[in-house]
Length: 251
Image (cartoon, rainbow, N blue to C red; front, side):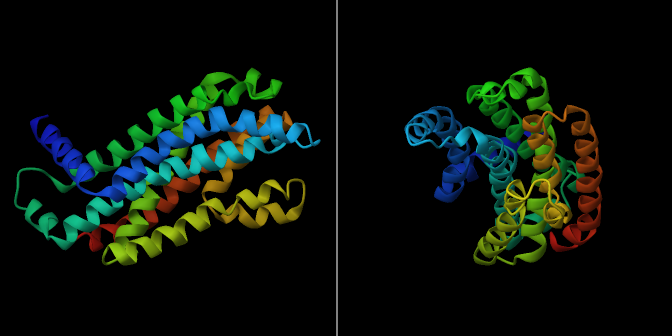
């Protein structure tokens, strides 16, 4: 327990030291309040002109909360590992009593738990379950919490992509841009619902969680667990495929 507390103190120091990581950590909180307070105001303004953003609310929520917010925490941990690899502190960790498996479990777990808390609270604060839609109100908070849990599976993928394909922070930024673009691209499928073209994005792991969330609006509650189940299996499979190369690139 003392070892974990020491790691927490170190990570908090690293977080305060880098302006970029402070920005990422605070951005997830800013998103919560923007969606909660800005979206209703914007909707009222657009409604006067015959336009409503409530139709696109599932796409907005699934993108900002269930993709972008978890990715922010994955980027923070990924950059921590890049720094530690450049400083060769990860090599020295191998001769300490702290096992690498414990260290990685802590790092991955910290990001996933933090993301889950922020995403769950953010969803409730933003009232996504009742944002002008009876379907979301009926779905309830518990289903949103389930989505928050599953969305955190994208965090290990982001961390592994950064560490595996980047040698430094400059390359890390390029990897982040590419991965973020890829993970957010299923948003396009929202405008292709009901066509064969939407399944073009099925190879992207974030598609399945988003698709399940959109089904609430469509009232297809019976299919949600099927999509969420496939999302779990697909994400875990990708994590397992990437993990060996990720471990080799840690040192």
